[in-house]
Length: 314
Image (cartoon, rainbow, N blue to C red):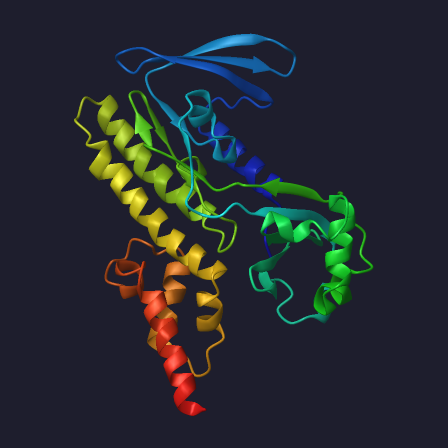
């Protein structure tokens, strides 16, 4: 089962605090100024209205979807992925044990281009969300609550599992989340995790990118603060961009139906299945894997091979 996100974030923050790092909750960054040497002055505002300035030699922006530095300095750029919308909520899941593999994350293909996430938490609550082109929701109801209810009721599996279950909180929406920046670093700062480029919730790549980019950035920041020269283009941006580009190919192949065809192919090749699963597990830097090395073409070639094999069997 999955840990509730709020509990996970709290555990991480408390762990960092125990290591001696000050953690400020309910605090907003309102402005950042960098001088020519990369030193910074960050203005923050606390929940009680108190304003304070923090001076730093270097900033690691790990603000996720908040994208603090990109938004303050107008660094956001549109992604080449189509804009999509999610309508989601946390719901009780009392029928969970009546279904196969109830404690695993499940993706339901509602219809081509529309999918559903089912993420069961250890506390009996499940995150349930519908992802599609924004226009898909137009005839499903006038508000998120109606849309969410209608979508559950219209799908046999979802209706059986969640149709009579109360909601922990009412449905919310998130739209047009895919975004990127020109650079993942600058004079006095580096971006990590989803701040570099947020792709899509399918395959849950966010945690992997957060862990890998933060680990790499931390080592490079220490080197730079110790007076070493760091080639941020080659040692950081090039590395992270390769992983982002690989996952982008898989996200695009998911929405155009290529991956669906591969996932449900009869008698799949065991080696190819292992290689693709490796990518989706986060090994997007393993260039010995042809489905990493040729991420922009390998899936399409495999899809055509499946079509050819199906024709022969007809």
